[in-house]
Length: 220
Length: 262
Image 1: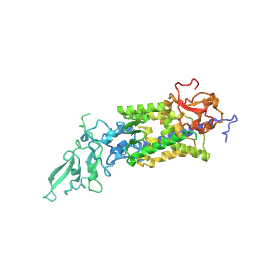
Image 2: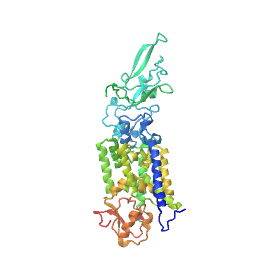
Image 3: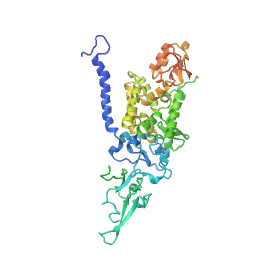
Image 4: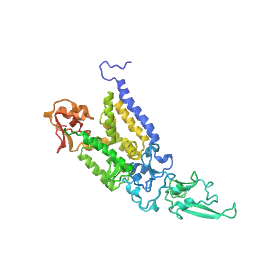
């Protein structure tokens, strides 16, 4: 095919084929896969991390995926993410609907973390900010509909601080009280116990990304 | 029966796998994996994982720095890539692949060793530029570790792919030429005192050692020159060459200084 070199050894064409094209193709394929899978995990939505986790991007770099936080968790609430998490593979995640974080007083997961991906300065469980609970479906919430539920309120480890009940007259029946659970984002630690305890098949209260204190739109 | 190095080596490799499995069985004296661990209360850390966390996460925990340095010091004393030969579970897998490829007779050509330096550079560059700790994400070592400790089995596809490539295409290509952690330890090992020594007078030139050596391009030159020791960092101190030598021309020892002839 004209590839034969009369002097023996490699022709330029063979060299290019063997030594340049293959690695180039591999690099392109690798780059394509990497661009999809190496995105930060939070590009696909919120991931609930153990207490003290650094901001998501720094956390992904600082976590060495040793799994010691998961091994230290007495409730087995911390699981390690699989390949579906992309760049977050092997990092600890909490799925509140399975097992929420029960906020151990001594924070064994934070103590177990060697790399500081879970911030060792964190000592007080009320300072934990894993996320913030949000009522995403007010129309379905039994309490807001005027029924007696309030399970999230009563299960909240920071009852009357992070979740309070706001009482108002039920205008539909005109004789009952609506006891609406209200999340206070400056107190909520994001442990997910409310999400876990919501009695509805699809929880109406879920943990979402911690909302930073919103700046006034003129305040830059 | 004479002493053979493969027995303690294989025992240690399997012991590491057993240690990583311990926490799942409820036994408490070991936690973690080869990225970071605690053995009998002593914190251990993979220095490359530490570097990535430091560069990408910009966090410095002094105890973590201490354990990364002490682990580096131990590997420096014991030959650097001795991690690859004695500890790493992926090394165990690729040794199996090596055996199979010899058996099937389709062992292909080897890729130059130096390319692992490039992957080490790529890992450090990526974490510095993007904050993605590339090797912690893609490391087959981490994947195997988590498969043992947490039964996270699906990512095992990657080490399985490596094994297939090694059997069918290129002998031990991952460990020899691609693993950034191996490259890191081989840089340490260049200055390590623990080396394979060579007694020229006893050598019968049978070539048995070169047959078993996973990195024969580092073993062959000193033998040809009659140098007293193997100085290259890529020697994994697996000591298979010593086991194979019937003339006892190869030794392992702590050498005070590097030989003049490299």
